[in-house]
Image 1: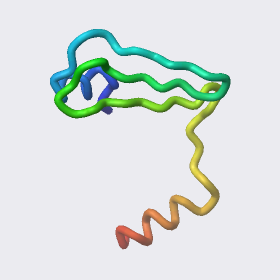
Image 2: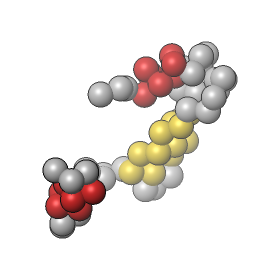
Image 3: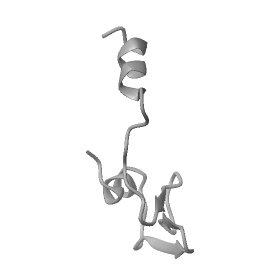
Image 4: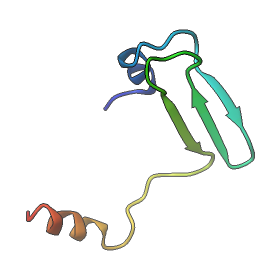
Length: 63
């Protein structure tokens, strides 16, 4: 899986990432890139699959 820093390298970014935070989210960006690189992170969030998502994915790809 690509890391945020890898996307920065691919897009010719210079400088360190900058983070803007509010109570619920972080926005992480590089200050100077050939193409924008942004990461939105939900504080306290986690990655979960919605109910029925796996079936929809397999149906879509006809697996």
